[in-house]
Length: 264
Image (tube, rainbow, N blue to C red):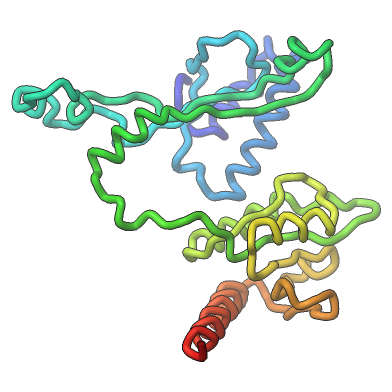
């Protein structure tokens, strides 16, 4: 296949007799399987196309490569008409801008400039001019707000068999996003507790949603109001109760601020 569903592409690669005998290919397929799991966790499969024909112009990539496009980056259906009516040199109204972001994995690039050090990297670059061209066409800047984090999703655990609940943190974060709640998590697979709280404090999060090693497999999570000291253990809720409980606590926080302002 050229482009299509990620799982379909994986099956195609796994069925190749040539690739089965290639260690590098097998390692790449294993990495793609991990990626597919994370894509499922974020429930974004419908937005992705697995394209075996995709190529980047630089030769330092060592793994996955990707490009981001949007419907707004393609030429409009009435491009010819818009071009005929245009009276200036700005062609953004009728010319597609192509991909708006691109990147990939490059494990050896740092070593080329730093005495052979092995530092795995992954990166992405954004086409700022292309993005501004799209924004200009939409001309709707009223709904843009400052970036902030209300909820930080954490995982507590350790010992034998502990995997850090990375995929599970992704799923909960995505659930909060879909409910319109600004949420974040630490991207490390096994982040220690202190670093997670430090990241939450730096992000200015009001609440922590905690996935405990013993509690989460039983369908329970803990919601903790941040900034109230270690004695505040938080409230234990089920997965079904999570959204309502988080929204209630965030709403209560806004009400408290309003009362303080009115009292000034």
